[in-house]
Length: 374
Image (cartoon, rainbow, N blue to C red; front, side):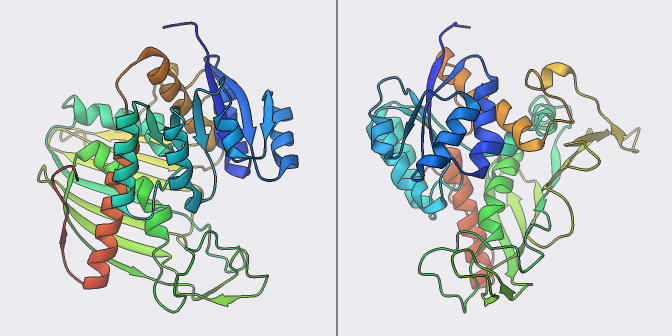
């Protein structure tokens, strides 16, 4: 492991940067927070002061021109992800981008190819890949501990938008509010579909149903009054995988429960495992395991090495998982190790999201492409 520190620039100084991204860099000795950029200078200045960031910009192109910035973290609203990713790639810098990378899979595949051609590293902000419990399940699948995988159940649901007065965010520009607007399957589903694909393999076919449960909401940018909007706040899908496994998937904005509301249940011929990423009573996540001979699920305690230095199960989940994500990406760049959770993975996740939306609209099974799109 080299002693070099990676120069990092962060685009966006909103709440998620403050709760997850910036604490991750500040806690890792191999990362150096060189610059932060936000359209509101006071917000960027506040984050710079709190996290010891060296320089503040209000124009992203000025940050990209900074020679000491080697990797750029895009933590900005959804519709800016794609153009900013292209700008970072053109500048020849490594890039981490929050999800979703694009609103359509074809655009996500295109920017993934652009990064590969430019020779820069990429990573998607799929936070939950960096849960210690999820990573343990993925290892048990990869090393054969669970045997042949039969079933996978994936959930990402909490009651974030159960209260209609909690403002709905980031409605796609130009969307018809009188027709069902995919939302939970995009905002939550992109995470979930990536997790399941990482563990179980490529999707073969999907069928789905989506609906709107809370018909009137406050929408950010449209005042404080309730607005009638057909936003999809719950989706269910069933999936067939290339491996032969079966899957059940659910996303919801209105299912009572705490953040982040992720559950992964995997059942195989030699064992079964359940990871529950739901903050309850000060604990961020739990992991349970069972075998055909001992079918009662028992809690699993992971070693301290499974957690980023200075964290444990009582660390708030955004910081716990993002410290792990940051640590992995910085090490990938500095040590030239194999890439994980790249823009290509983001494109494959969006491809599955698109297929689930299509399956609902057309009321049929939709097959997913089995080749890397050209």
